[in-house]
Image (cartoon, rainbow, N blue to C red; front, top):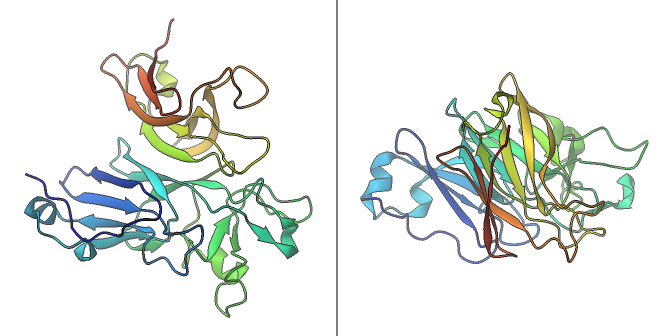
Length: 278
């Protein structure tokens, strides 16, 4: 019987994502308390041994800090190599005067992270990932920048954030505010062979961006075990990402026994099954 660690953080981001690895270890992800916290004490993934996971009387703080500095890592999934990946929701209302002032429409990037080494730090709240900055300012997606609330604290400069000994940058940058909530690696037999090993990510959709974006499922194409790009997979058939004729906000993902992709939508209250017709 598996126990749930007690005394975890309350309030804040409401998701509490859990996943087990092949050794029976339990991973628990908790998001930040606010848009931007004062430190990363809460926003991290803790790992519990198989013994701890089965005990049922373990304190939440007894878990190893497996990954730190993750604002809201909602979706977690292992790939076929046993590597843990996560999708992260970035901060809102980003404004940094020297980068163009109000840059929240296209920044920070939502992140696809690989947790290749236990105990590493991924940036939040001191750093953010670029998605699209004004011409002449930006350095390209995944570039790390100091968060405006910390950039003058004497430690967390742009250079500090870009030092990979301090911060692990994301493997892929995704558009700001699309709110990725789940990720699944495709191992079914319905879709063409070139899709096997790729990932699908659900974008729940933005609430503080105009025009709105997200509201779809994207395919993340992998080459040599690493993500190289994302492309639309299940989306509204229009120039916009959402409208009255598109009732879905994707949340959970799964691969069915016949290789179909299952997508849950909390806005429409439906589970959509997507197959492939040759």
